[in-house]
Image (cartoon, rainbow, N blue to C red):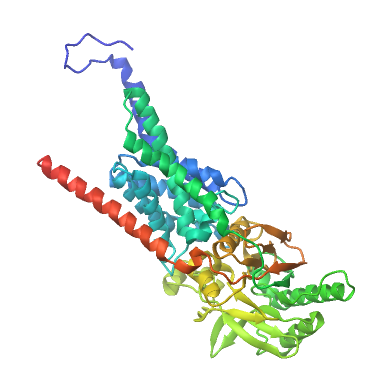
Length: 537
């Protein structure tokens, strides 16, 4: 490319033939941030289970920090939205396995708005001193909002849930999922600042010591804190042990119509329990103190169906131990997703009704509007389930077992309430048959591993079709089943009653991080107002 000579201060005159390449370069320059935002979102998705690439979350947020630095809030929203799409589109594809792409795309489009708003906030605070701290706090604030709205929230995709195999996991015991997620995101934004300041110093030969110190601490403190928090993680029994049996009966077929053969599902779980009882009688397997069945293991109401009552009662008598049965029960004209404590001598003695029910799965918000769009969707949820109101802790052969039914495992409060109500271990009865062999099963299993460390409790995961598992209080999976097979797991597990710092403080860390996020935004807005006034704008 040639250029005509110019006087100092005059614009350079370019050869007319250089126009098209310049336009291409300009287009590429404009598209690069958008592409980088979307691809860094994909990178974050790859860090989630079933892969064990948890560490990819750090460079994903480093890339997001680069994309958002110095942008306007409007550009930050757009780039954050693209990051959200890159992350959530593949992460939540399982939501459309049986119902088609419509609900999946609608969910992602809505959830990505929250990520876009976080991106707008991060752009605003990106040039403040200590930017990584403000940015990470804003991310956790966005997760806090997503966990509560709309329709009582959807916390799927919390950064903490991608860290079950990572070095940061012990931080869950310190401050729960908000502190664990904050540490990961802070480390990512801190990494970007370290690289940016290093490049700047090399170019200008000026080292900004204060900024460099903050950036280095943003990377170092989460890592050091995670290693320090290991002291909070233990699988030592405090209240003795219990031998627990987890039953996976399997289903006749995967998909939405698995429960069209509800009696078959119940019979499968009875059969697997009776098979286990025969092995116990033969001395091949240790006798369990109690047995845990999955969610929807009896979609036939045993209180109104004598035949279902009889086969469940027979299974309890065969194994000679109490069983927690997942049933669908109608009371006063209302449906409940219920866990039933079934004693081999007394029959049903206690119940727990699921409190955090799943929108569009167990109840249908905006039913008339959705019906007008697609009547098939309303037929999938003909009658809404009702919510329970009390925590569920069953006393099973002397052990206190907290019930957290499937979707509830994603919600901090739903798990903590069982522990503060006295649970010495936790069971997460689930039904993933609707989602076939998708990644949903592994994403949910990772949540249970995080909850085990968060509250220092053994967690069992009985699932109709797999993957069922036994998880130690340190997050290790000691046994698990395959998918779509009938199987059972029997293991002696520790019972614990001490509370971790995370259990004791509850929502406080999340509230403090929300205040930090608000403080950073307030500072950035006030700084911008002062600068505009000083400039006479």
